[in-house]
Image (tube, rainbow over all chains, first blue to last red; front, side, top):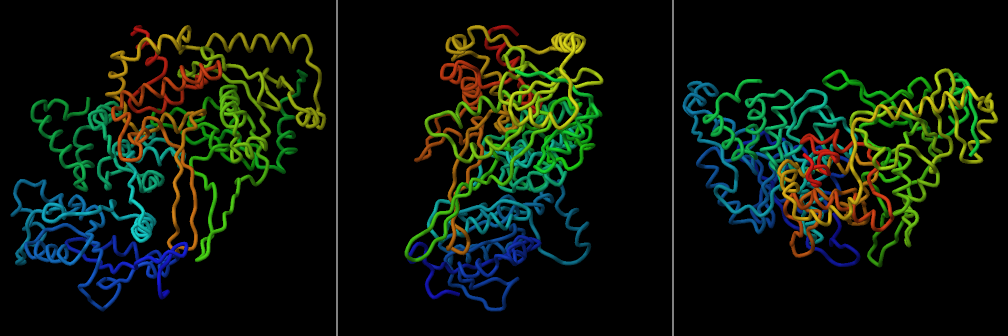
Length: 272
Length: 345
């Protein structure tokens, strides 16, 4: 680690950062450690004081807290509140932290006790519905994705260190998908949330011929009504679109609207 | 112009002669969900990979002269200053083997802005000047309205243009390089029979157009219909996804971003093609967005193509290839949009 960080001779503060996880697979943090080619540069840019997945030392003096995972237990609320108190900047890392992620799928069931029983059997465990961090604390920055795209985190951290404004793409995945010269998956007969999902992943899934599941949440001008029309035109039923909209939680409000409409006009449920 | 004819099997020899360069041409990309064949431009290593009977490529040849994303410069940063490195990203000449007239005309239109303006774009020029283009005639697809835009035949902007006469190719020679090239294969001057056949082929092509756009007085009509309800109708459908601009052979709007590398010792400047349909297209410093509504963004896309560009260059920026409409999931097509603005549903 260099003595003093600087850019163009201007001294920079090396932020003390902590990585934390609530209910999650810790895959987002693993993404950061996975990037071996740039890992040393990344470690030089920040002073990590807490990173359970990567080191043994623990410290509570940090400027930036990256929190992965959703809140599914009461003790996690207390922990999150403590992290918020310690941190100047709190970053929601990944879809679980931003929207509840895959964990919030359980919220979609009517009977939470049944879900608990299915998953844990008779094992005694305290668990509630899954929440994004913002339901309990102020989130200063969201990093979307399941998992996060490491290149994007590196760009964001660099921007934070040099003092640049952090920008997320406002347009949907289609933009990056076309720039990768992919053939539209709808034309190949597969459903996709690319037209409404926030870009920034460089069309990771669709470039590998997997339709988008919307892990990064809605783009700024997401036209869900039109997407519903398109799904219908291409022969996908309402449940297919809902499966995807409900998967990561970013589209929860849109999914609720569609479900409410479905109650009013159940005929559209079936394939025409 | 010089005309020649040569037997079809000579084309493989032509390919072999050009193969010292990178050859880009239409290749098959499988079928869509309805079994319709799909094509795209790609680097071709084997003559048999060329799909010369292609209908239309999904994406335009634009990226070979105007990549979706291009590093304009990189910087080596030190404590005392910085050093700038510029690479125009031109490595070897590129041979386009089988480009349809619409795409040739599209490059000519891009030239008006990027090559013939007061400040030519060196990144574009470097690639454009290193193209050798073999044009190829085509049969109109349902989405094609090139005839309406006057771009159904190419007058310039290619080296060689081939028309399939059955057993032979009819060749229009437009450059010394292509003349020299043809002298290395077996060619003849066209006979009266060849000319008759050529005229027959072109008149047959005319019969196959199904889509059209009425361009008469279009600049004025667009001015008069600035407040038309048609814009709102299409705006409601628009996904603001930028697909139309990305598949368009002439859309050239872009954004430039600077990024400091993770090691704080390097930085770069990248140009990315943008689209006027994207929500942040008209967002300026301070956060104000001049076009927050998708209807207004869509309208200005048509204004640029069919009004602003015509007033500046006396021709439209649209070549009528119909890719935007074919690629649009919301089925927004120029013939329908323009007809609706004209009040013809």
